Length: 319
Ligand code: PMV
Image (cartoon, rainbow, N blue to C red):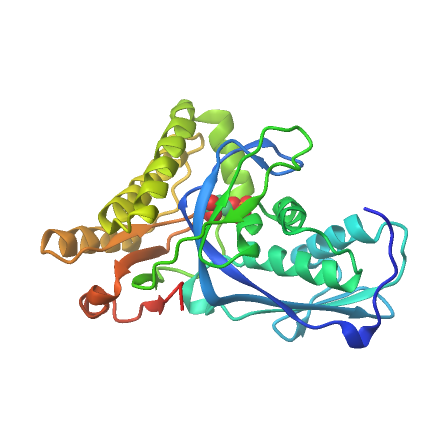
């Protein structure tokens, strides 16, 4: 993009982007540099849970996370400054980046999706870029794939696109709302994972023959999710999301060296969910590249699910 002057400091407002949970997962890149996915994905945003970010003029580049200044060589700080460099070009004005996650650390949720979406929005505002939503989403994608979907609330589809430059690989919101839908965050562990999603994806694509079936699974699931959302068919939504997550994890487990993000407590939680379903409470789960579970259920079943998972944080994505 063209080099532009920063807007006056007084004009900068913190911007917010929600975190999101994929119901049909993004797993595998066809272009590692541009973060172009092998498959399209579909998520639900977590309403008020996410990241707030603000840029302002500074003497030297600074990155602050949840009120603490990060060391210049901190991994996250380096990634943030490198990302800003993509947009400021030859403009040498130093910036202060203040970013805050209100995602409860206890929920064990990754924040890179909302983090890069909020950063892109803050950059857009600070440098007065006035990018179209689709361009914002495509650029957020380059920070972290799932960030492309955090530009919107509600159900969001990230279309994989076909072009080599990636400008047709961005997310769009779906129009449907589903006020009764609840997402429960079940924490198993908040320890930093040993293998991040980028390396996990690459390992899976490079070493798991099982991965060959993944694009077919994802395409079929995307279709089912569209149908489920259009008809408010909760059973179809939950079954599809759970099977999609387990299929993704199957490809990880089939990698070499094997990649298993689950802990014994993750499996115990899965079994508790299957038990709840068998006894008539309709609840499903999905999991990302980590040990924690995200539950899907209807408002009417909230009390029953909470009884099984008392520490669970409940999100209403459509309020
Ligand atoms: O956006 P990344 O690079 O952190 O990858 C996200 C991968 C999953 O969370 C496992 C799936 C998804 O679609 O969010």
